[in-house]
Image 1: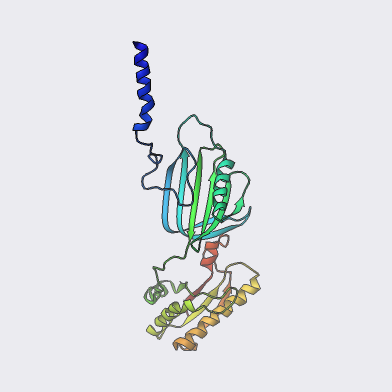
Image 2: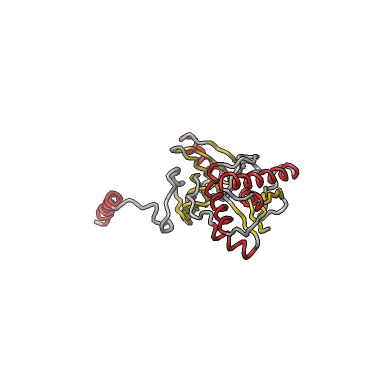
Length: 282
């Protein structure tokens, strides 16, 4: 009798997987997280940490010494291996899986340190997507940073009233948004709204005379940057005179090259801050 019962119970247990709902592999994921559409997760992993930002910046390694800053919609995802008795995947196994996946959709491997980090890139729907993958040596965790490259929608615009207050309180103000052709003193057309605000500031205070000061980053020689900053400052003065009717006598163009940085020149973000025009009360 006991044997018959055991057989019946065994048969019932054998049927249970057919009647129990499938296991939800995302049940352990941190709330609000999700896989990025580019990749399936490695088997047996859950999302331990997740951050998504509409616009952010990440430095991607392009070789052992250089990085490239990429801006856009940014995902940071940390995967952690579930508890279990199965073999741990190696770091190189995790890396190769992701590299193979990106290659299958036409992407490329930009950088591979041969141990635990790789950078990949793919173009999808006309936009570049960059991927930074770091896998722990012991195999129980890997981290993805994915940036869908795009320009930020401008929310803060040039404002003559704000500049007026800064000049009154500090005697000078940094102006961003005047863009030039690379390594030239030719002002790009998209700079016009900023030039218009500069003209508005000067027209609103006829007694205000200013130095228009050009600044560069430290890339290149000092002599070249000094001349470039002087030429760019002069181009701004000429634009304000010719297109906005500001008297030339109220403005003096000065170029100081790289000698007055406001940020480090060791990163692209810092160099971008250093490339600027300033209005200094004269």
